[in-house]
Image 1 (cartoon, rainbow, N blue to C red):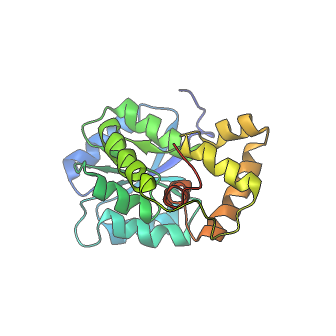
Image 2: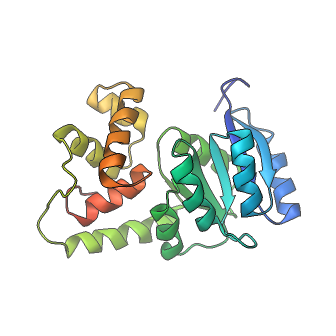
Length: 222
């Protein structure tokens, strides 16, 4: 994983434990793929810093004083849909994963993972991928497969085009924007444009939310 300073992904770190925040900042400083543009120790400050610093990815603790990480994400994403949110927390249950994704998070890691995994997660979500810690991911997707198995015959209440449905189906398989573009022979920016149309039609902020809704309708499978 290599990047020049100009290419490095701009990251805002939000963590309320001073020692852990200091440790995360130190660890991330060793990786040229990311550059930490700032930090915050509570949700309200995080939202202020987002406006000032314009990060590309927010590495966000779930357990914050006052406004928690899910609430921060719910306020941030409608204002800045271009910013990716990667949740980092001690919680590892699928309900929290679902709540975070519902409001726009693109990834979810538990704090015990390595610095390399965190940086890899930041790069993945910025490139249009989804990051879920393996044990959480299995339970999460199993849950939605069971929902899908009980669902009615497929129907599309959003009027998605054939190309948009094809794009969503690849997303459901876990492909990133770049990988979808390669398979569908589209430029990555074209994939992003089509995704923005999908989001608008479906009333969501991320491809993960779009895939979840499409799964519920039986429009895509995993």
